[in-house]
Length: 58
Image 1 (cartoon, rainbow, N blue to C red):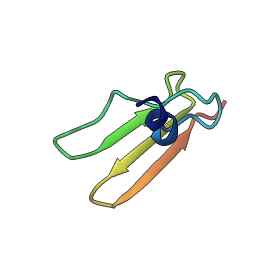
Image 2: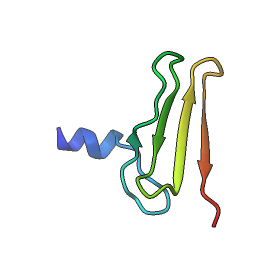
Image 3: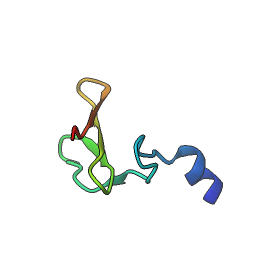
Image 4: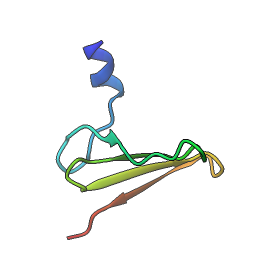
């Protein structure tokens, strides 16, 4: 199982920590993955069928 996590786990481009799913909205199907240090956020919107990525600017 560890090899699958390394192959398919998504990482923050800045700090290389694994993205966590905390703020997802299952009612709308929106999946939000974020860096634990809030450097990076990735959202999947099924209606748009695309990912939206955002980075913290500081």
